[in-house]
Image 1: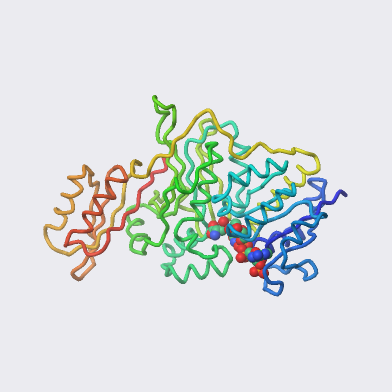
Image 2: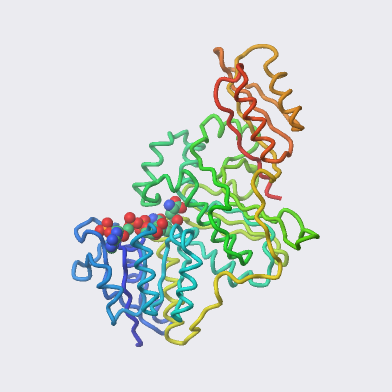
Length: 440
Ligand code: NDP
Ligand code: HSE
């Protein structure tokens, strides 16, 4: 059978997962695509490092150039991470006309447009299915499955580490730091994990999904990001009592129809922890699982679900790209449809301050008559309506929690009002606020 040689750079969680999956299912893959993929070399940082799956010593090198520049290597995986060496690896391979398969959403987010242009210039392709949602084939779905749809809304739980932490905190009352350590042990978290918990990994992925859905490159600077550090056990508990679950969501949502003057559709692209109705299917997505809810104008509502991080799930996505790359090399679809094609419906990313949503607010206030009136007055002056107020019983002491559900209001107005409320002498800690998404 026809054989193609694969050069791998990175043999850690994902890299060793890919090596193992090729051993496990290489024959099956070869039967299905008519080409056998053979690992020729694997570059790592230190050959003696323990790996989730073993890689034979004879295949290992510490010089990635030996792998990428080997004339016998036909295609390259970049499974290193980061944006420095990884960028050099990808650029070198593309310059040599070799297809590259990457799981590196940080790299795509920082340098996507120039890397895709480079691939095109050198008559090859950059494949990135593994960069978003681990094992869920969401890139293929958006690019191919929904090619006939305009994407009206997309809500994604796209970070496995954050979903794992939020699930364990809500379900098992586990502490943030301990659960983060578990996620790191399982190989889910980025290095450093701040990329996950501050929302940047989700921002990178949401940018890729938004760009695919709307045909323009949406850089991270246009995507509002808030991570999960501000979510406390108290918030999870109060949200649950109100019938909500807190999830870190990537949101790509058309906010109306095209503006009459410039013909552009306003679009929200953001990442933040949000309250979603506990009865919604996304609320049931637990642990390291991810899910993407897509609403297309032809297809209606669809849901994609699967493990969003980890060696095996991510390896599955890399294998799918390897198959595409091998088929492209052998049977030529030399230049795949570019990833980001300008579409007739133009979109404009709306500044977050203008986005309108409902809010959940938790305040730590002095337990004294008249406090609520002062807070309500600030919201009233800002034109923000209060839908409900809860002062849970059973909290003793001078400082007690006060929960408010706010009616829809522009983000900027809520932010400014909370700034004023936070400065009131009766408010004893910075206000905590999460947006409420009905996912309609
Ligand atoms: P790991 O840290 O587990 O693996 C990184 C690999 O790169 C290691 O094998 C390391 O070598 C090697 N490496 C580092 N520097 C160099 C270098 N200069 N030259 C050669 N090799 C080098 O990371 P992951 O496998 O978790 O992540 C890889 C990529 O996949 C990242 O972009 C990540 O964002 C992405 N990703 C990760 C997922 C996951 O669940 N972990 C899921 C989806 C995407 P050594 O082994 O010797 O240390
Ligand atoms: N750190 C990422 C996550 C890995 O937890 O989702 C998968 O992209």
